[in-house]
Image 1 (cartoon, rainbow, N blue to C red):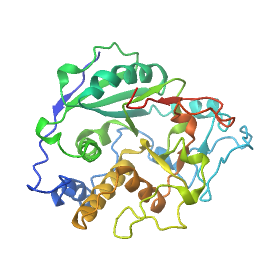
Image 2: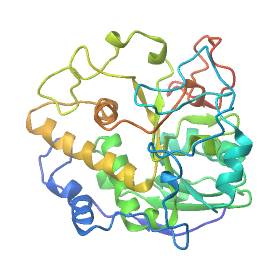
Image 3: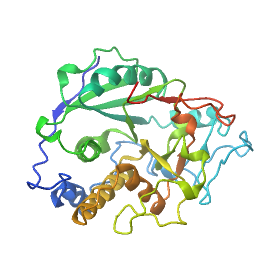
Length: 335
């Protein structure tokens, strides 16, 4: 495996007794960077206009209007963001656009404990084969023990960078630790290295091309189960005291926390809001899930692109006719 920079993440060093291991210092670096105006993605000698402002007010490349249609599914949201299904995009047009711009896409994954041994190797092998084929990709792998990393030979245009979280931080909520670590690395170096970034759960396997049709300023994944259910039944956080609360009668879609994407700055914004939400909930003795905070964020900050359940399907579910081409398969933690 190609080895890039290896960095040991510093301890969070948060106040003792704080149940979520989260305090003002948790997002201080994010706030300082924002106030200093240092969150702009530095991508070197690229076009003056950011890639995500290409030709659409929603941050996506405007594809040939004669692109294929899918009358059987929702392909555009109420706020005019595209929902990506197989057959709704022109792969040739997209590749022609992005290949001229020499983009780099980051893929971040977090794995600790048994997740390293059981899921990480297959995740990386499948991503190496199917993720952004033909484009420069940097794998950002955050683990608890570098010696447990699988020994893999990556394909061309692939770079691998491994980072370690401190063992004393592992008793924290893992979603909190994952997002805090990712936010730190975005500030330290990712925003200077990648034009676009995805963060994915490690217990997934790529089965088909996951290409540039997924790129955008802010990318959300539709939940493989709840997409086909009535909005009123979505498991949003409903307690009014929670920062993640979406009141009854409101909400657009239910988003899956296993995949988020966008520009590094947009993901950093999401992380900042999530960490502040955790602080708020903890002060009110509430414990809302990361996925609840994610859904609240996308309710207030509409994603510019949505990925259909084809990009995160659970093979234990019966395949509905709307799913034509599964891109990523979810592996249950019980597998």
